[in-house]
Length: 143
Image (cartoon, rainbow, N blue to C red; front, side, top):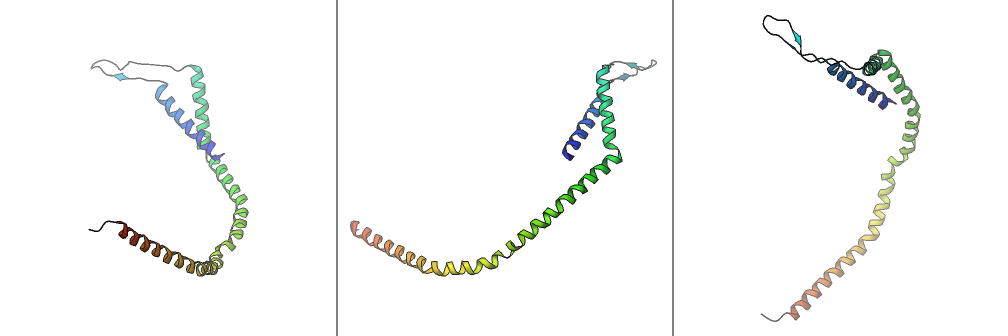
């Protein structure tokens, strides 16, 4: 709702600005010893003026302090509605803040079980690399 109100306000102000620039375009030039003469004059159709008046009234409505008060009341109501849900969510997430304390012992246990296996794999890979290096030296012709 607040986004639509802002969008309507922006459109109304843009149309208001457009109307002010295009309803009557007059260009006056002064010739010494003569009066100002209107070079260009364009009149808007009646429908255009009705639309302009509608959007001007709409813009004036949004500029009124009571509209700002309504918007603030709406925000306060929304905040009041969401506050209990936020508090409930925070309460539900509280136990998750202690999860690190529960995971540390588990991680240490897993690491203690995996460390001997990783050492064994590392020694096997090193032995395999040594074996491959020896066989490669045997295959290569002497230099």
